[in-house]
Image (cartoon, rainbow, N blue to C red; front, side, top):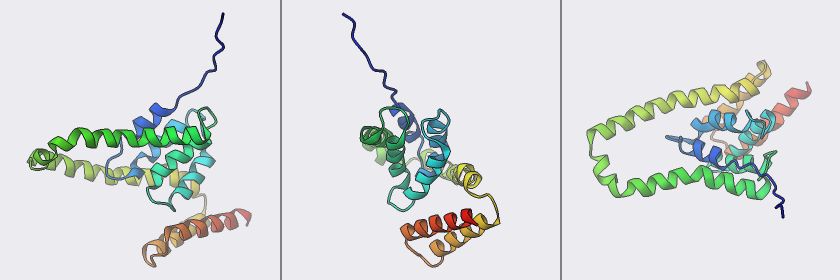
Length: 182
């Protein structure tokens, strides 16, 4: 008797790999996430950028974004099981690191070499954040002067007038739609 099998593609390792490289902020993994899900065609770039924009309005945006990506994937598991798998896989490395390092943390944080390594890693994260802003955000969302103006307006109302992020996302989406129609 032959067993009928259904082939499921398993994307958990992709999210685990990306989650294991997060240091200093979730945005540094944006290019990695894009390469893992857009590159093989699991999610198209338009859905990727739209999901990233929407995720900015909630706490823990890139981890929430991983759940979104797992949900909208074109390969199985997707939907709620895909979202749960992606979310679990992207958080798992951090949990494992904390559990593994916790017994040694007091000893590690007093070592000058460890402190120097952390300062160096934190400095490198700044460059990674700039790279993440440029690719994929800038290259896929800024196409002309209107887009630049909208981005500067969004930055100003967020940074200087301290408007809530969810409202900035909604206004920017509406502004982007308006620019696209003109």
